[in-house]
Structures are given as C-alpha cells and as structure tokens.
Image (tube, rainbow, N blue to C red):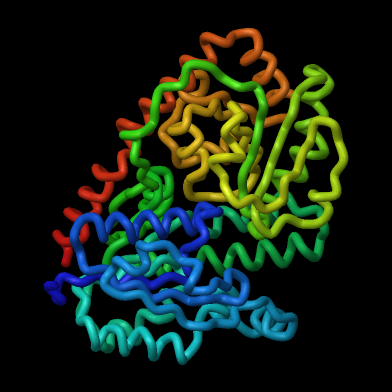
Length: 401
C-alpha cells in the first residue's frame, strides 16, 4: 500500500444505515475512492443521535484501509444553546461537533498514515482545520452536502411563531457567515450540485471547486414498461424540512388529490418518525414509520412525490427514484440541484392543486408519462454516472494535491 497516496475521510457521523441522503452520499464517496484503488482511512463520530454498533456495518468498512469511530455526545442542550445564542457569533452546530478528544484522534491518525488528502464531510468539521494544518500538509478538501444557510433561511420564512422565526433567522445568518469562512478557508471544495457551486461562486469565494453530485450505477437498471399509480415519499424525519414537507402533504396536498381522485394512495416512510404521523388514520394517507428495506417499500409504487419547501443541496432519493423508473412530481426546491426539465424529466408542482393536476394528467396520459420516466433514466445514466463522477473528482483532487 502506498501510504503517501492515502486519503483520510472525516465524518460527523457513521455513514450507515443507508436510510437518508447524508449517509448515502458519504457512503458512496468512501466506496468511490476505494473502488478507484486509493487507501481510504475513515474516521467518524459515533454520535448520540445516530449511534450505531460496529457489528451492524457492511463489508466496505472492513475492506478500506482503516476505520475508526469515536463516541461523541452531540445532543442539543438548553443551557449551551441559550449561551451560544447570547454570547457567540458562531452557529451552535459548530460548537456541538467540536471535542478535544476527537481532535486528538485526528492528529493521531494524521501522524500514523500521513495522508495526501484529508476530506471533511461537514462544514462544522472545519473546527478541526487549525489542528489539521498544524500537523499535516495534506490537501484539505471540504465536501459540501448543501448550502446550509439556505435551509435555515427557508425554515425561518415558513415558521409561524415570532420567537421561533427570530431565532431561526439569527441562526441562518450565523450559518451563512460561518459557511463563507469555511468555503474560503478550505484548500478545495466539492459541491454536490452545479446550483450550489454557482451560489458559492456568487458569494465571492475563490477556493478551487468541483461539482460532484451523487453518482448512481445504472448498469443493472432495466427500462420501465409500465407505471404504478401509487405514490410515495421516503425521508429521514429527524430533518426539519422533511417534517415540514410531510405536514404539508398530510394537511393540504393529499386531501386535494383525494378530492379529485378518490382511490389515490400516498405512502411514506422514514427513520425517527414522529408519533403524530404513525397514528394518522386516513384512507389515502399511509405512514409506515421506519422500514428495513427501501427497495421492497417502493417496488409496487410508481410515483415519487417531493413536497419540499425548504432545503438545499440535492435530493439523492429523487435521483435514485429516477434511476429506478419512478415518475417524480416535485416542488422547485425538491428538484433543486438536479439538471432536470419540467415535463421532460419530471412534473413540477408548487401548490396543492398542482400536485392534484399532475396526478390527473398522469392517469390520462399514460404513454407520455412513461416517456418522462424513460427520459429521466437517460438523464441519470448520462449525467449522474458513478464511475464518471469519481474519475472527475480524482483528477480534480490529485491535480491540486
């Protein structure tokens, strides 16, 4: 093993199980570097929120050069949150993900493997940059899963409580300032979409940057010949934009569709499901809570509904749905970052009645709807090919390192 060609990937949680976009994106990156023949060393926080037993992990974690996880308490606590709001200019997230013992572990790993590249999988891991630079001359790359401030500004806009709105606006502003510092401080940036890359460039950031979206292996995906009219959504429910989206779906979108199409069925699932969703009893709105196998869940369903109104980055489950031959009906925010065109690769809907009209159109135009599905599969194959994207990243990173 050429130790000087090693890459150290640092994650703010263990990227497993693969039930949310963040874990899937990190896992795919680790797998991509490994398949490219690079010695991959993974150091991950095993947090209270996403705690995992090492025995549950798949073979990839044994196949890479090394893997260690460090116990971290990242729970939100009332007093530190209030103290941060009053006395600090940094977002509380940055303070929650910093711990001296984790910093020491990074230093130990650097001394052990002398990495050529160090890749951070969260902007809040930039808190460790001073220690990293003190002990290493490696290329410090920041992987950006989204433009974080966009999420919080949109959440603040949608919030109805005055106190909550004020807090969220304050938090969004801090995150925006912190993000800009992180973008400028890193040696290189990996944006998850062209849209995010453009936002970062418009901020005045001059750091070397490459856009690498989530890659999908399309070799084993057969063309779809028919389309089920059951609709679904998958999303981790410990992420506020997903909760907001499903509340909107329950209260406005699903009833609007049901009124026009009485036999309409909407199914949704995700980990950390709140009780108020699992107790819902409507003949057209079905909550399955946390599921073991996403592929089994979506097998008999043909339409993915993405009713997101806040968020940033790219929706990995939307890319996967397109690859699997599902028809996507999404808001502008939900499709953000994906190079898809309305009525060519997906159907756009930004109001409850838009979703109802879209479902009606699909039922009345089955052949045209199926063509949209085929167009979307081709889009994924041409622009989100896993091997092609990993090759692009390697050329970018090694050109700088």
